[in-house]
Amino acid sequence: MNSDKINSNIPHILADYRKIAVVGISAKPYRDSHNIALFMKNHGCKIFPVNPNYDTVLGRPCYPSLLDIPVKIELVDIFRRSETVMPVIEEAIQIGAKAVWMQLGVINNDAAQKGLAAGLEVVMDRCWKVEYLKRK
Image (cartoon, rainbow, N blue to C red; front, side):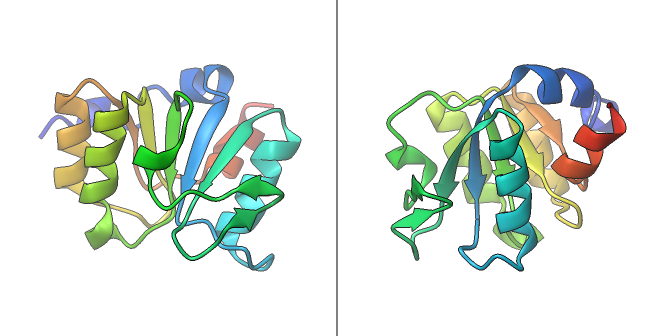
């Protein structure tokens, strides 16, 4: 396994990728996915909510899948159970994303390796907000 490349580009990803799809976002304000997406939005990122259960989240259109987003996404931030990550990675590859970020507790080595093999930068088992605040 090529684990030395996982989590190796966090500073670059945080600094350079501003168009972020948030897969598994919730419209419920007490959920981490909602709060972290709001934090991203408030810190200059353009978020693209992805959840087939909602029409809008945080005042933005919510898309059923990555394939439905009409603009080029740089980072795919994943709030899904570890065992459901592979199809998200496959869609991220298909849309030409630059990186995928599996949130804290989301661990899928096979999906991470598939992303790396396709040229994606991969972050796994890290919180975007925590990492963002660390660099300040």
